[in-house]
Length: 147
Image 1 (cartoon, rainbow, N blue to C red):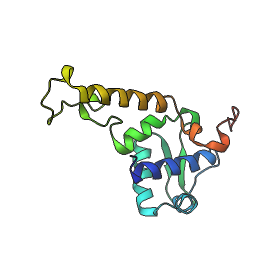
Image 2: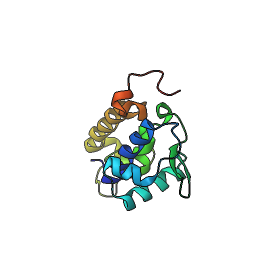
Image 3: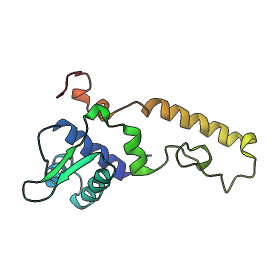
């Protein structure tokens, strides 16, 4: 299940995507339009900025903006940034692998691991290659969206 943090990040990013190249978007405008608590949003936007997804400008006329076109922002990157591993078990994670502490079986004989590898692969098949633009429904079919 996506955390509230990941959901808010997606909603904020889709709003910024709709405002792509419109200048600096104030945090209070994003919070109001997407109904996100401003303090929580501030922490999320700072994390997205540190990850190189957003740029920002401080001050009265400041705000946030996308550093790249919405089609270049990978949703799998955003989800991993906000929630960590895509995989439901550490022993099947691609980016955050750890051996299972609780499993009594060797990895190559564990049916639980085998099934959750399938879950991970199916999830990644859907979300890898999806971009922010794919989530911006009313713009998703527009090849020439604000290039």
